[in-house]
Image (cartoon, rainbow, N blue to C red; front, side, top):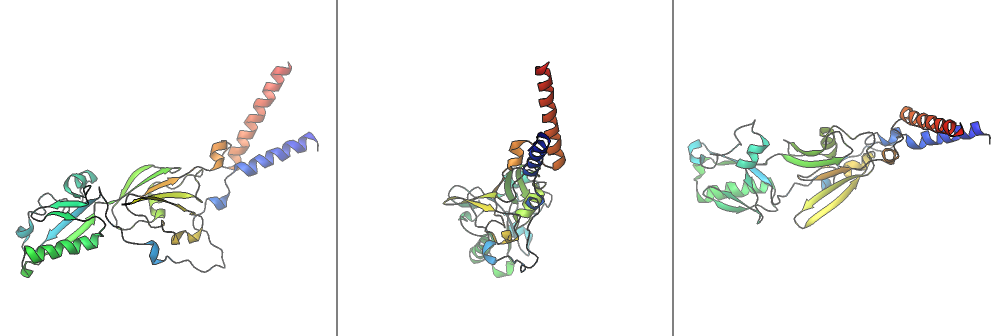
Length: 262
């Protein structure tokens, strides 16, 4: 093999290896002949409260004055309340799994869903403190859906979405999407449980990702998108970038050779 052909072969090899293939950038790919993929109920379980969670609890009655003490510092009635005000005025779950409410006192909520807590508070108030005619109505919500995302995304950090359910595609979109140099085939999700943490891996280029136990996130999940090898090599994300890198290296090598020769 003569030198021109050898150089061409090396150049093409570098371009093929260094570029990020299109198939590595497309989400939820599926074969045309494959049946439609549906989300199974098992991967969308309700969240159970943990320590340090913050609850917004709003108690209503036919006569608002009857429940005024419960909502005197509540941000629940202020739709534009900030996350900071929710932190200071919401009900925080302490290390023992309790929240402290006026009149009721300490109430254990660790491991309960928000719906179970709502029923618990409503029943307690109706049985011990108010007559049925009072029309007690309780609303319990988490103080925003918080998660943390890091790695090869446009905007890293802790994010808060004001909705009950969030899937990983929505979370990534809220962070500005995964960069071209991010590995969509091996996204890590670290999930905290009362007994410890568990790490999941999900391939977002595969349509079966919707059936992953981490496709639907839970509050306080941590998402990490690792870089592709192409970023480590530094040869460029596209064919043009890789070609520019190769030309620069060849020019540098040629200049160095000529200087040394003279």
